Image: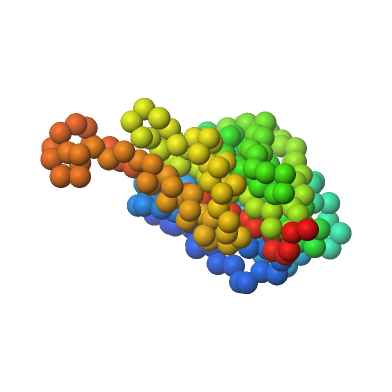
Length: 261
């Protein structure tokens, strides 16, 4: 496992944008909706044979979590290249070791425990197989010819225990299969007392005909925004009720190219 940096992340430092070239065989996209206020963060590394991606929700405000995310990004990108770049690597073992490296850096950069539900995936482009760790309940919906279903989350969140290990799961992607990840800001978007929830996310994935990862992310975020109930006095800027700060709304989608049978 790669060693962590020994110095603290610079105050105010922000992570670099995810910048992927046009990939062969797979479409990956992630984006935020609305002003960012918290610790949602995503990144990806394209190694040609493998695409490694990360989406996490680091507890805390944007100001507090940006330096942590920047430090995690350094470790994620460096470790992903070192562990999964060599030909013939054991993907399951490398994915587990990558999660451990990210976990250690989260705790080190935060200078202590930092609750961080995280989805870490390594997609094998030639085989169409995803090795993944869903640590802490990040909502992940997968859709193929058998319909849409939730990928289980049985692991503890990152950022809590230094010696915690995670066992990756595997998911095969047939052509045009798609994966959608959303953070809790999407799932907990409210209309009155009702949350947006998986009962709306699953039909959205089943009914959205697009095979564009970008359009899939935007459809999910748009649905969550439209689901919100905005009090009439807030629309008129009247000073009633308590001021509330919207949570981050973040989505990531992965779609395998090709023609379904």
